Image (cartoon, rainbow, N blue to C red; front, side, top):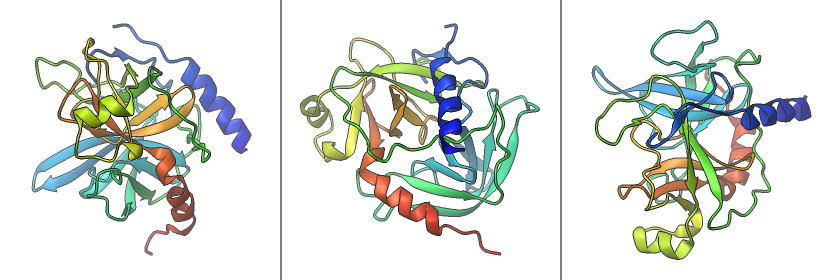
Length: 248
């Protein structure tokens, strides 16, 4: 079953395309079936949105700062404004951020879903490569989300978009963000190009090849963005998934 899921997801990754996140393009509908849209309350009637990745039938991986109350996950979505028949809206029963998640490099969190997702062509988990894999400077990776997609206004994308970003060296990353441990992050974004993740993209995936390598953390110095390195937390993810249970 695991190998079949990996094969199906790999085919979807290779089929991503678009016709035009900042400087990106809309993906082919439902070509990223592991994408999760998160919606939750932060204060009263104010709600926030983030991205996430379905990594098993009932667990979503996202950023720890994507935390709030009344959290729900929408799976199988391309357009998150107009409800689609492919949607699966599932409540979150347990939120588990990484220990010391306020510390740079630990901005990662697991969400336990109240019920298992129904797997189909629109909804498929993305197995994590626990062996990681080095991402070299100059590598072109992709980030996806429903966040702001124009640098001149605050419109958030109604449909899923993706953008290619170039990985920069640890030296450049440390100069851009002098107060972080660059070993726990992937820095990506070409200063010559306006291509980067933005508001609303937090918690979404950074892919290099067909491997999930990073989680959108942010960065206040676009176009260079920070991505929490998934390989640094692979052991924690694997151990935590085994013990996560919903309260009855």
